[in-house]
Image: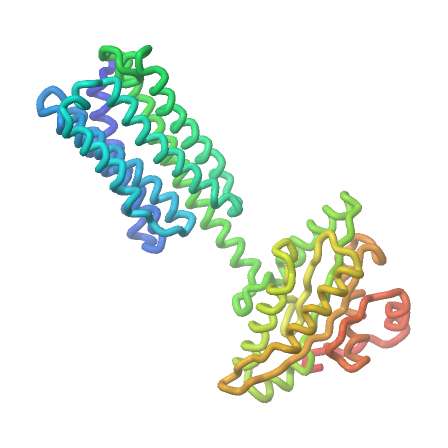
Length: 402
């Protein structure tokens, strides 16, 4: 049985309407996922465009060709805005109406409506940028590691090339691929390509959202809720991977152990909320003075670790001193009272202790003990002498409150 273009369009209307309802349900279940609203509009508006195309021959050309294509352009524009929303960028309302408005204005000209070749070229020039910009929006958010992001980018890129290829084919292929007289088989093939693109896009968009939810859950599981720093669990997983990578590459890495001074007295004086304010401010200071590629972890209480990839001991010492100076100069407003605090920092390097995260942690911790004994608010780089001195003494009690 031969499937004609009308049947494909009719089935496409049903599928697009169903997908529009599905994405609308997704949006109602999670109202912050505003991109589902845009993608729901994409499918609903696309279904309306298909209905208008089906009316060709039984209604004025301005309805099927003019309003139908304008509606299709609006659907592509909504998909573009959904991509912007997915990566938390504001919608560009002009981008939604510009292409449909330009098309409708041209369709008011009889000469334009009578020239199929010009219509094919102009429609391709309007659709191709919308598809390309949608792919670009997903590319701009590539730092968020989602496996389905690249296939989505490739899908929009190839579909943009598909529409752009109509321009050089305008005098070679039948409509809608070109401008030669219509042949039912070519129309059916075009509508079939649009239909399968819609299905594939739906699968990928749902996968993208699922992957983001899973990534958010993993991030929350490895993040300290108070300070936003990575937690001890993240330290054990990321730290081991990072050290192993540096061992393979034979590159230096340093670990900073940071312990706030006299933290117990701050808690006793201002309560736990005051202590929380100091911790939050401290983390902000550290993040302002390390690279985006460095990692800060809250190990527990007022103790933190910072991993500095591709950093030798001298460089790490400079980073630690910068953090110490900036935090010493900072003022924390605790219940209207300006509060000052300091930090002692121990530094351990793979150049001295090798590529073992546990040994680096212990040696940096030992260096912090030395900093406390020397009067606090200082940086000490772990050396063999410090380690030997520590090993010769009885382990000190926990430093909470030192």
